[in-house]
Image 1 (cartoon, rainbow, N blue to C red):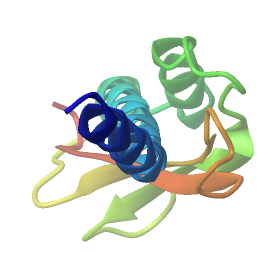
Image 2: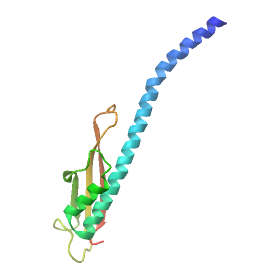
Image 3: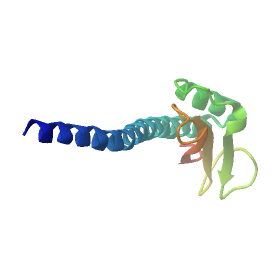
Image 4: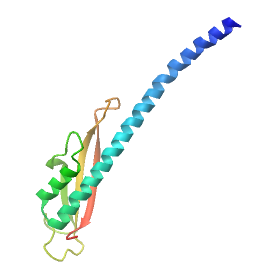
Length: 136
C-alpha cells in the first residue's frame, strides 16, 4: 500500500504542474482587468469634469486643464493632444455666448494605458467621453 500512495503523490505533482500556469494567467488577467477598469473610471470622470468646465466657462484651455487635473493619478499623465473638444450640432469651436439651443460640447480623452505586467502586450487604448449642453 505504501508504494501505491507514493505513485499517487507523483501524479499529484504532475497535475499541479499543469494547473499552475493556467492559474497564474488567470490571476494576471484579473489584475490587468481591474486596473483597466479603474483607469476607465478615472477617464470618464475627467472627461465629465472637463466638459462641464467647457460648457460653463467656454474656455478650451481651462477645460483641458480641468480634465488633466481630474486625471492626475494616471501615470503617464494626460497631454493636451489626447483631449479633443468638439461642438455638436453647432458651428465654430466654442459654445455660443447666448441661447445655446441644441448646441452641446463633447470632450473625449484618448489614453494609451500601459499594461502592468506586459504579459498581454504593451498597452491598450481607452477612451473617456463627456457630453454637455452649452451654457449649462
